[in-house]
Length: 259
Picture (tube, rainbow, N blue to C red):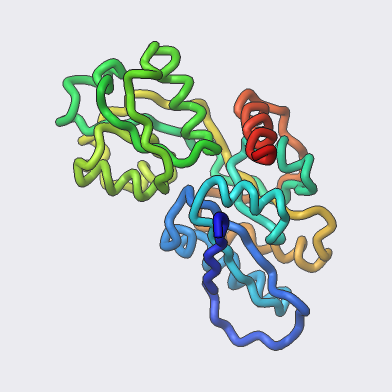
C-alpha cells in the first residue's frame, strides 16, 4: 500500500469502555518515535485520566503520507508546524494550543568539514533535511537560492530532525537543517563543533484539531498543555496572519492533492 499509517500505543493504562472510539493523535516524521514519546507521554496520559478514553498515537512514516492523512482527518488532532495553519483551516481544523515559541531553523555543518561558515563551502556536498512540506526545506531552498547555489548542493530529503543530528555527529553528511528544539539539547562542547551557517526567523508549532471536538476533550487538552515537554504550550485560538511559508504550504498541498 502506498500510504500506510504505523500505529503504536504509547500508553497502557487500564481504562474501561468509556468511549466508543479512542482519541487519536497523528504524528509526522519530523521527529523520531522516541522523541515524541519523551515530550508528549504525560500529556497523553493526563488526557486519558481526564476523559476516561484511551489515547492512540498514529505515526505516518513519510511526510507526504502525513500531510494526506491530515487532510483525510484520520485523527482527532495533530502537532503541526505553525505554517500549516492556513491550509488546515480550509480542510476542517482549528488551532487549540500554541507552543515552542522562539524556535528557529538552523543550517549547520561540522567545523572539520568546511573552513568557515560561508554557505559557498557546501558546493558539491549534501544537506540532510526533513520532507518537502517542512519549514526547514522551505528555508533551505531560500538560503540556497539567495546564494545562487540551488543546483550546486544535493538536498537529501526524508530525515527526522534527531536523525539528521545523529548523521552529522557520525560525519555521514556535509551539513543538515535542524530545529533548535534538537540543536539546543546538545551539550555545549558538541554544539561548539558546528558552524551555524544560516538561522531562520523565529517559528512556532500548533496543536490543531478537527473542528467541533467534544467539549470534554477540548477542555482536557487545554488542562494538559503544561505537560508537553517541548517548550511552553498554552491555549491559543486566535488565527495567525498568513505567512510566506504558510502560503507556500497551501500551494504545495493543492499540488499534492491533485496527484
